[in-house]
Image (cartoon, rainbow, N blue to C red):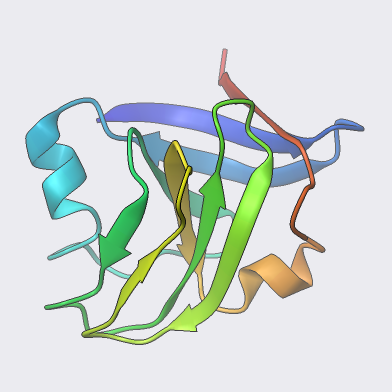
Length: 118
């Protein structure tokens, strides 16, 4: 996994301060399975990805589907364990703490920015 990335909004407001990014097929398939629950400010970016499942997970997440330009296509809040969600045309998904999307003010068609911490 690539560690230490951040997400900001188009006006440089910090959204997430610690985002892991998958770097292999195995990591994409595993996602957050067998991972301790995320904390506020943390996330997992899975790319390429247009669908996820929460089979085997024991906690809820928010799933933010993004296109190639990092524009939010679809937000699924409080995805419970043993569920499947998808967004046609999505290039990646950002998994975050349940209810974080609303608290952070994330909405569909909002453009985000990704960068590695320096």
